[in-house]
Amino acid sequence: MMISTRGRYALRVMIDIAVYANGSYVSLKEISERQEISVKYLEQVVALLNKAGFLQSLRGNNGGYKLTKHPSEYTAGDILRAAEGSLAPIACLKNETNDCERREKCTTLPFWENYYKTINDYVNSVTLQDLVDEAIALTADNYSI
Image (cartoon, rainbow, N blue to C red; front, side, top):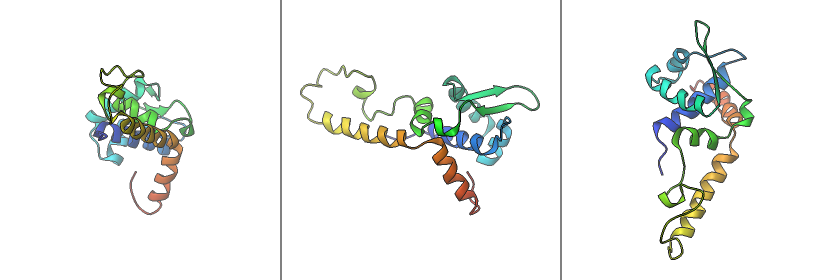
């Protein structure tokens, strides 16, 4: 399984907004400059995050985006699933029920189920606040978020 640029950028956008919002809205232009991502691509990413209810938007000169909840209330898994859809490594695990004809005799299914569980357990254990804290620690050493 490979996370696309959409998923990677969604995490970066959420971290950026969490770090720089300070109670106000953050413009896509500001995010674009800090993250070195085109505004056009960011529009697609924030549309997914907005649709998931993670962002609040405001139009106009002082407009932009801010989080709808505290960073500790989002997980990396929530954000990645909003951007990527399912994180399932194989098609038969994408839905809640496995409708594969071979599920009863598939010798690799337990491996894939455990792999998927491990991925979900990890991404669900990391909050946006955890990522923000790491980003702030890194920026203190002159790295960019």
